[in-house]
Each structure stands twice: as C-alpha cells, then as structure tokens.
Length: 357
Ligand code: BGC
Image 1 (cartoon, rainbow, N blue to C red):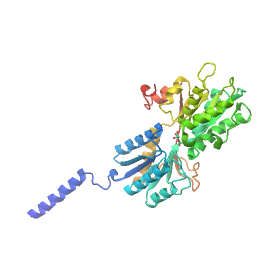
Image 2: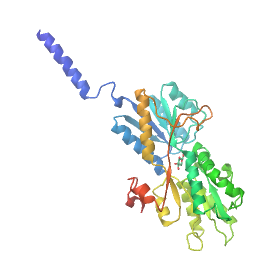
Image 3: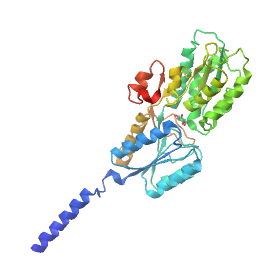
Image 4: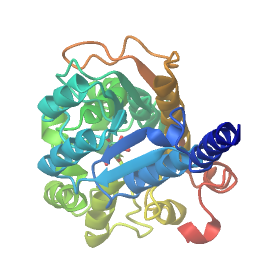
C-alpha cells in the first residue's frame, strides 16, 4: 500500500514539474518562427522586425529574427539556419526576390510554411502566402498626390517632372511605378508634364538597392540638363530613401529659396529622417504603411497556420509570382503630409513629436 502511495505521489510531482517548466507539447513556445529581413539600416525593416518579434513573444513563441545586410547569400545562409533550428514558419522579406528559390524549396520540403513578407518572392512554387500593403495603391496615391498638388486636371502646365523608381530586383518596385504611372502617364502624353531627361521607362528610372546616393547621383546628372532659369516642378519618388537622395541633390543645386522652391516630391515609409523634411516643405508627402498593422496581420496568419486553422487572405488574383498566384493579404496604405501628419503619425502613436523634430 505504502509503495502505491509513493508511486502515485511521484507521478503527481513529475506531472506538476513538467507543467511548471512549460514542457507541454501544445505550448506555443515549441513553435519557432523564423523572420528573415533584408536590412537593419532602413528604419522600416527594423520596425517590421521588432514589431513582429514583440508580438510573437507576447504570445509565447520563440523567434529567430535575422537581417541580411542587403546581401542575398547572407539571407540564404540565415534561412538555412532557420531550417536547421526547426522553424515551423519562415517569414521572408527578400532582397532579390528571384534568387532564393532553392533554399525556399528546401524549407518547403522540410514541411515549413513560407510567408513572403512585403516583397513577393518570384519564380517559386513553394511560397504559401504573401502579406503586404497594396503596392499598386502606394503608387496610385503618389500619382494622385502630384495630380492634386499641381492641379493637373485644370492646369495646362507644362510642368517639369522627373521619375525615381525603386530597385529593379524588388518585385514591389514595378507595382509602385505602374500604380503611379497609370495616373501620370496621360499627363505626360498630353504634354502637361514634361520629362526633360526623357527617362520614363522603368529600367531608365529604377534605383538599384533603393540607394540614396545612387538617386542623388542620377538627380545631379538630370539637373545638368536644366537651364539656370528652369526648375523642376514635381518628382515622383517611390520611397523615402530615394526621396532623400533627390533632396540632397536639389539642395546642393540651390533649391529651397523663394525663387526656386522644392518641387512636389513624393516618398514612402514616413521614415524618421524624412518626416522633418516634410514639415520643412522639402518633401511633400510620404505614403504611410503602418508596420504595426502588417506585423500583427502576419502574426495572426502565422498563428492560424500553426493551429491548422484557415488563414485569412483578401486577394487571390493580383500576385502571380511567375509560378502561381500567391494567396495574399493586402493592408491599405495612406499618406502623411504637413497637413495631416499629426493625426496620421502622432495621434496614432506611431511617433512622438520629439521623434520627428
Ligand atoms: C518596401 C518599401 C521600402 C523599399 C526599400 C520595398 O520593398 O515595400 O517600403 O521603402 O522596399 O527598402
């Protein structure tokens, strides 16, 4: 009898210990989520990473978050390590969306679910989901902003206009460009907008790696075409790092005075460095993609995957990656300019005034 009581007590103690130490197989901490992002050096990606990590950890998941310094081989190595560590889901913001298909196949063969994050990974059958902001809408918002600011529907112009698109290896870049050009091309065709550089095709206006200095160097060259009494009235820039390059070049060329005010200049991301420029009138607007919203959507999608539940998507037609149409969730972007930045960026808790002054 004594032996039986001892045995039952032992079982009870072992059971309690295992419950206290979290050694429970339905525990979410058993699920490691890998997050592979392109670079820490742009504010948006470091926010994406920290927002997702924080939200996953609050829910008890383990997170392997890596940044690849914009180097595809580093990213491949990082994904390889995530496979070895036993990640169940890997969320990837790719660098070159065409060059990681082999490692993704390896992950998929190992039973890992792949979510393409913000940028679509191309030419791979092994992408399960895509989560992003509506990239075409980002471009449309920028194009419409230029139309409204120059009052193009009733103004005959001509206005001098130049275009700075994103990196050619980023699938998003063409969506941004196409969204904006659908709005602006009719005005180029009718001569209301004049592109003195003659550079309007995506390949001519793309900015490798979204690099600020590359954008500045191209703007320097373009400005050589403009005579002393001519000025640029509007610049379409797909994001803030390119807009920064455009601003640097314009400042060097003497823009910013009352005779030569800064042109209407678009951007994207509402980077901390760019918002002060918006308040000073050097950049006109920036498309706002609240990374907290995208992060929580992806955390939700990942939880559904891990629980074997249906994953919420809202687009099954727009994103063909060359192999198949990827079920997607598109969040809606908006924009901030000097008139609404308080409501969009401060009241929403995204920034404090001291962040952007
Ligand atoms: C993102 C933008 C970002 C750009 C440069 C794009 O894929 O969608 O938000 O500005 O990459 O990092």
